[in-house]
Image 1 (tube, helix red, strand yellow):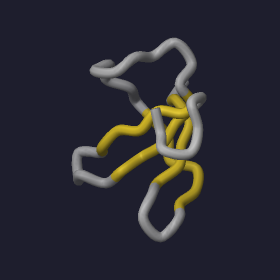
Image 2 (cartoon, one colour; image 1 turned 90 degrees about the horizontal axis):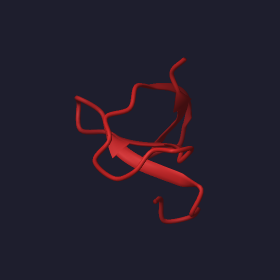
Image 3 (spheres, one colour; image 1 turned 90 degrees about the vertical axis):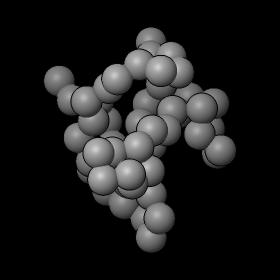
Length: 50
């Protein structure tokens, strides 16, 4: 889960950047394709790719 929300997970991109996305049915260790929708200075925020 992310630091700010139990409903979000976080992972790393292939470039080692942090990306936060909705938890849905995923669990720790799952590989998830995410589309980045916005960002902060340190974090990419996205949604699961359909």
